[in-house]
Image (tube, rainbow, N blue to C red):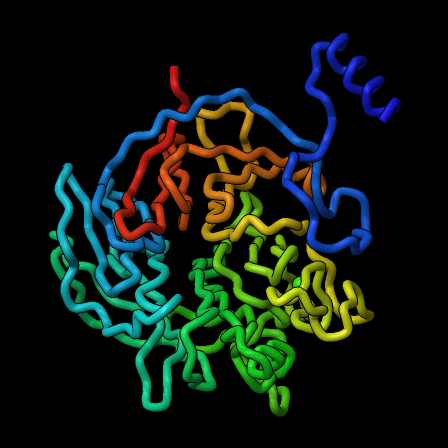
Length: 392
Ligand SMILES: [Ca+2]
């Protein structure tokens, strides 16, 4: 205590902020982190007041937002609607696939092809209703010039096996610089099906990589390996609902963990990220996850974890002129407590964390626009699309 008081006093004299972790609340576990800064990074306060402008109101559980290069905006609503916004008007896009919208399922992510300006190709992920249950699927389609409909709908990926449940569908879609697509997948949550996050013959709990036409890239890490699904790029994830590229083109993912175990990872090809063998959290009933261990040979450590959890949703790296102090920082949507989490990254590690609450509810997706504004959707029964900028 004496040390802390002295440190605070010294910081006041220096006019700097007091170097302490963000006051996150009581931890659920007492696992020691694998390295300094793996959790509870130093709290940052940028002193920014966010200006919140509603763009679309009255959305029903919006899940994802995509900003089109022509200024249009696409928003998914989980019950199964795709909204198109342009020139101050919002409309519903017809022709999208049917979805299974029970519990966490429904229409999920929307991503635009890097060649959208010429091709008008977009991708949707969703819980696909199937004989015997459902499963995450990804479809490619062409958006009409007026945004009223889609055509040439083709399912390019189906997560297998089919499972009869309503939880942990993933599923962010990230077009990579080399033309492939990363897709994040959940492990369907229930015991024992969640154990298949370690089963390489299943897609559950995996990060996969495919081509936009559904073909498998020949340089995927497990192509030609017996008993391994060739789409798999990395394994051992719980429910990854945030994925984005940094400026160098490296993929980062954030997953919903158990109680006290949300994780940030930087997935490398062919690696195993440990779930449900290792975790920094507990099951939500308070019991240990399997053997209650946080590390094992051959399994990767998270770059960062949160205890208590933040319930992370979408994420994007900030680059832009409106928040000069935030260049290269990772902005993550959070649902509990609701708001935005900003992480400062330094040499592949987290060096600071800030919590910002625009006061609009559970943030489900985050996209940074070319003009530096931040666009978010709120996962509420009466949710919306909002544009954030600094108050002047
Ligand atoms: Ca992990």
